[in-house]
Image (cartoon, rainbow, N blue to C red; front, side):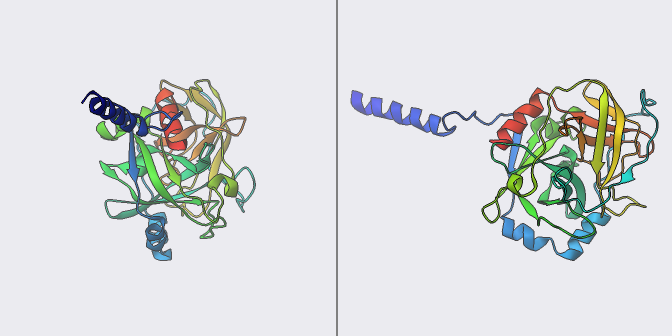
Amino acid sequence: MKLNRLFAVLGASAAVFALAPAGQAAPSPDVVERAQAPSSEVDAYWTPERIADALANPMPMPTPDGAPAAPEAGERALIQKVPGPYTTDKLRSMGRLLFTTGGRNSSCSATSVEAANKNLVWTAAHCVHYGGVAAQNVTFLPAFLNNQKPYGTWPAKKTFIPQGWISGGGRDFSLDYAAFTVESQGGKTLTDTVGAKGVVFEDKKNQNTDMYGYPAESPYTGQEMYTCSGIAATVQVFDAKIACNGIGGQSGGAWLNAQDKVWAVNSRSDRRTVTYGTLFDAKAKQLYQQAGA
């Protein structure tokens, strides 16, 4: 009888430890993981017509709460077109993000980032969970340019979104970041294929930055990458702001520092003079580590 009890206890303990492999932290309750449809189904969904529909209907970049303050540094700068092709080491890890939210095909921007699994993409939370609805058919198109996909399409395997973003109704912009994993293709990971940017956490200092994304609101088409380069960024409480016009479709695009690493993503804009980028705190690092394991 005692042996039976002992074996039962040992079995229960083994079951608990099986939940998290040795050396791997248990999933955080602050991160919501959502499995996506099989890659074959997502690839089949994105016909040329649906891609065109998504590009024509970009995810609106949220406006600031109240009138934004005047920029504290730098002059107003309009986004500038990035000359193609985007197959250089610096550019090819950035690209278009396609998804469906509430039956509506839409688009944002995203970046391949360094991770242990070498298959991780970083973007804004409002691109993959908007208006209380989780996105479906999430797909990354690195180096996309004028309907050309030089590195193919990379459907999401699983999305990782801050719990607070969801429970807060998508209004806590300190949590406007998200990630998703993709599957290797032809024996090569995403990082093997297009490279990956490093991600910087707790970088709360004023600095010059290069902001990237694919604007898709008129007169822009979502077919080309644009940037504000070398522009001064002023850090606030949980984000930074630059004197540059952010446009729908650029959401989730990378802000790169002097070391070519992602230290913020396009989050909000008044569409005229100021764009805000969400910085990455300890919670963002936790999400990043969980998604990239």
